[in-house]
Length: 481
Image (cartoon, rainbow, N blue to C red; front, side, top):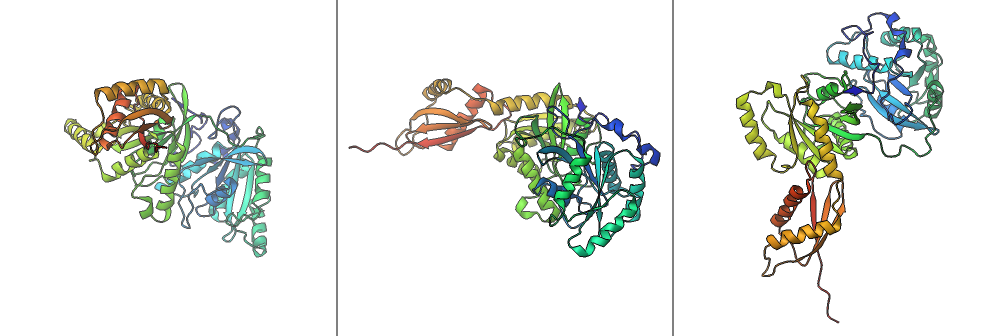
């Protein structure tokens, strides 16, 4: 079980997440093998975007991407993890890492956020320092500048929030940091973003030209979803073998989806840690609303979802809502009952009864007992994902499907409706991902009979871990000439 960040050991950092000595920060070139982007060939250059809280880092990242990907709100501390995105400029592709706000005297949750920013800087090919021009350089930014001046990594200094010419003089005052020429930009309006991207490409190592965009292929995408504080980030950290996501007792620590390439059983997967879903999207507001939208987008971009359930607590309405969302999206599904190390024998019996009642909509999903904290049962995740994806991709030949359906209907014909028994003329598999079957009939089939056909399809063609959809199309009789 390895990760795409072999150099990210954190050995040069103090135990409290701060820098123990500025001199320890000079050897960044030895961490040049880190890559959070696609690894299908040459490694993508990595740009780390750092700065104090609420200086516009995520807004600038969205400007680079050309879309609103990172969650942005006018309060400090929205971004907490280091989140990687693939960016493209002038035909060249690179990975941009958005980080939480860094402060030298951070404590508690903010200390963990700052440590993630430090890891991003340590493993990057270039560092982009964002400063709020309307505030100017603070003591925290001067401390950051002292460390960056001693390092060998290229640094790009950005004077953000320069919305008009009146702030150009304030931007020029940032020369005093000794990090080179400050580039005035406005992440909100896009002013100067083209010049900044040109400077980014000049600072980053050469990357192969990308003439066809981002293309398909690559590792299979796995979304980690669930209600807040069930252990999604802890599981991602256990799988990657390093501290990839911020973990804290505060529910809702993760806001942006966090991508990580993980090797399990000799195969590389792209895991996406998502924000915990508290309520329906239309009932959420502010940061929680945008985090819910990002979670839904991550689920739509994934191929299989791992829904984490806290087995030490009763199955809640939130758990059932998350499971229903995954089933409605048509993605393959694996249920991971986390915190199994906290469950005694009596609680196991209660869980069995709760799952029989609460998971009657997805009886086809595989269930795994795991512990993200201790690693118990985590080795079973990769085989379960492969089984679910094989079912999700499976196609049944039309000839074999109709032979099977003829035998099934002969043994159990559809119920009579309106005094007449509908006939099934033929069937075909219209699509996979998820498997979707269309039955052409002479009359309407009852919902119970459609569920019966779906259940037998699962049993006879091994659609384990994947939703199966059965649609009915009624053919009208032709009128007489």
